[in-house]
Amino acid sequence: MAQKPSTPKGTRDFSPIEMSRRNYIFDTIREAFRLFGFRQIETPAMENLSTLMGKYGEEGDKLLFKILNSGDYLKGVDQALIDNKDTVRLAAKLCDRGLRYDLTVPFARFVVQHRDELQLPFKRFQIQPVWRADRPQKGRYREFYQCDADIVGSDSLINEIELLQMEDMVFSRLGIRVAIKLNNRKILAGIAELIGAPDKLVDITVAIDKIDKIGIEKVNEELAERGLTPEAIAALRPILEIDGTGDERIAKLGALLASSPTGTKGVEELRTVYEGSLALGLNAELDIDVSLARGLNYYTGTIIEVKALDAEIGSISGGGRYDNLTGVFGLDGISGVGISFGADRIYDVILALNLFPDETAQATRVLFANFGQKEAEASLAIIKKLRACGISAEIYPDNAKMKKQIGFANAMNVPFFAIIGESELAEGTITLKKMADGTQMTVKADEVAGIIK
Image (cartoon, rainbow, N blue to C red; front, side, top):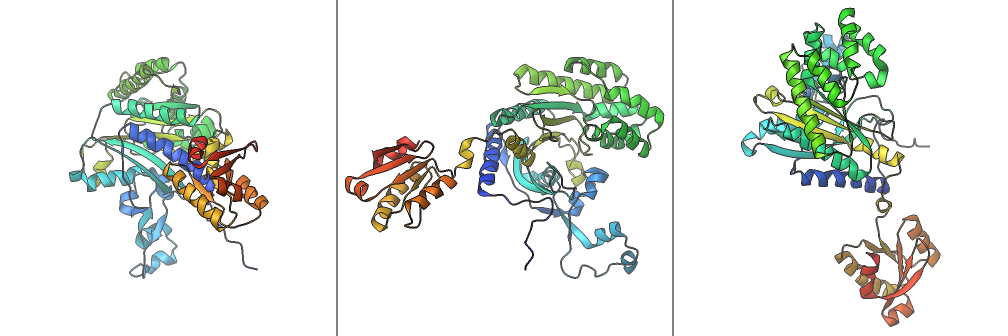
């Protein structure tokens, strides 16, 4: 017996109802992007490894899916590398391309490559899949969609405030209660200076970014493994545990980092974004989180992370400012800031909280019965008019028993079942059955669209 086929670990098929629900999420996000003036682009699934490597930190580089070169990929490779199983150097020889890890780095490449065609500031959005060679688990996949919005060519903190407003709009429309967490990379740089470890900023951010997952004690162990002294680790802990209201935390950070120009600048930026967002009003909670690091190396200013309040899952959106990202591609002086919605995690949250509208389970609004050729022809004529009115309609393709046709309508969650039989054909009417309660009415053909709408 042939083995049952399956998908690779960390990937999934999506059924029609799942796609309907996913499109509900994508459409909600896409509409918010449109309202805030963002324009859509797309980039290839694969990029040159030279574009991707070194942009996500040491751990991110390990999670890149590399694509084996086509043709004789072993040609010219030193046999010693193969004999010694030197996988890192072998991969560099055998693979020139990789699947994109996120949408931000490909976007930076796009900006540099198409700079002469773009009007700055440029606001773009993308809704495309990305791939990470991560360990699959609940809420974490190897293939998943990101919905990104970025603004490049502007230093203004108005951009950060607008992005937080957009986050708030999307999650309000989806019905998800969220907390938006804020920090600033310059504050983290100032803290690294304060504890005497300015050269360990990346190590610190990678480690403390895991506090929610592994706890402070495990983070301290990792910091020690990364070369921080016991004194530096001891000095860092009370900083990460700063408490109080948002205003109080900002004030404490300002006093703490008064001797650091970089840290002071970060506090000023954080205060501007925090106060500006609250002044406009948010449905979401807005928190200052000193431990928020988002371990990606390219962030240089504001850091944003969004978590659902009613579901146990990781961040469902996040982002930040990356002033120097395009510089690695030879284009200096282009500032950028952006956010990314994790559509797959958002889906899991909405499903767990039963927040999907009933309409997402319905593909067809009305199904017409099939009683034979003449009745079917009359039904198809009505169906064409309904579709012209924006109402999804179809006919059962076979002249089957009524029980089977109604059973199909129930299984497909169709709200209306329409009947044109001999008597309806003779009288120019339609019998319309409301599937939810079984009630029936006889109506004229030109009345159907209004009733269904």
